[in-house]
Length: 127
Image 1: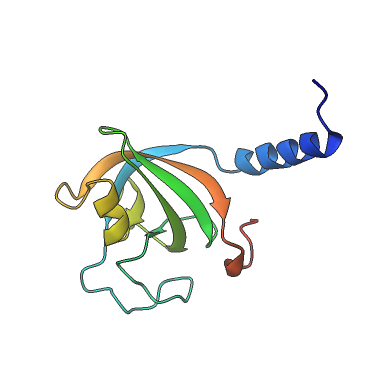
Image 2 (image 1 turned 30 degrees about the vertical axis):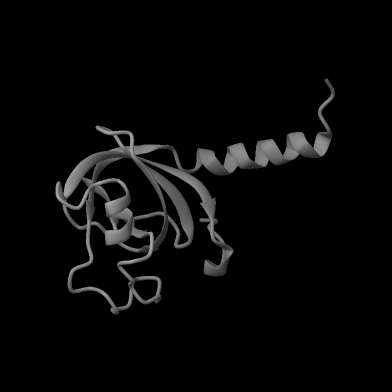
């Protein structure tokens, strides 16, 4: 089997981009009550019914897969805000995203956060 050189270059570019953002593990929480309609740190309006999230350092527009460690449930979200501002937490999910991984009642759960893409409308995800 022969692999085309452009395929190899694309694979290397993807791997190097992912190397900047290793998988993170920690606690996730959700936010939303009282924040709907307010501006997020990215300037976008916060909509609890969208699959978005707040992260302390990832560029706005980064798409991450959040996997609940105790159940294996997953959700993809777009980073459009900053936070969480509680020690030990690594991501704050919108209500819709939290519902997707059954986090509403628990409030906080162990998760793995992995970068899986980028929404170009935010101007790219390069740091």
